[in-house]
Amino acid sequence: MSAVDVASSRSLSGTSLAVLGGLIVVGFGAFAAGAFSSDPETVERAYRAFLQNFLLWSALSQGALMLSAAMRLTNARWPGPVHRLVDSFGAFIPVSLLLYFVLWTGKGELFEWMSDPHHVEGKEWWYREGFMLFRDVFALAWMALLSMWYLVLSVRPMLGHAREAANGPFASLISVWTSGWRGEAVERALADRRLRKLAAARLRKGE
Image 1 (cartoon, rainbow, N blue to C red):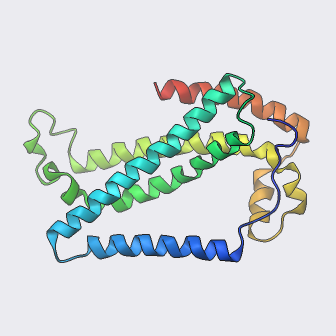
Image 2 (image 1 turned 45 degrees about the vertical axis):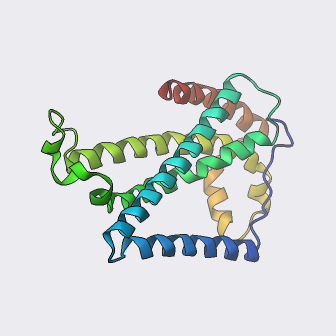
Image 3 (image 1 turned 180 degrees about the vertical axis):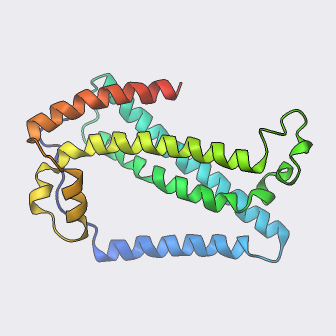
């Protein structure tokens, strides 16, 4: 990353936040209307749509960080600001972990064998409800932890200027994020070494 790769203390406008918040409310409202419908077919359709979107956006967010790791390991110079755009996709990863619990409420509509694991002969232990929940949450939490660690290391060097000018609700977050600041040159060099190691681990995990 070049020296111009710095973050400003700007935040989204009130109008943008209102529009985004409104879209989230509309989306969850539409899903809730389907999930709590008295028509079983509508309930199933709502959860299947939720599952498809969950898989799509979760895969895109993880795939974007895999691309980011590949660009970092190959010392790619062409991405420029595109690299930060790719990193930004990773912000959805912790959200996907929370959305999984919403998805779990529709397990009966999504997985017909959930009510009777003996339906899957020879793999009853693998498909038992408690074990399935544990392994899925463990895997998603582990991926989220690695991804957030990667993003923290990647974004920290950008915040040298923002930490001086930031105000409002993000000021405390930036302050925590840049705790123990060593100077921009040192932070970038340290982040580069750590990120290359972590990027290799991410790519190996994704094989």
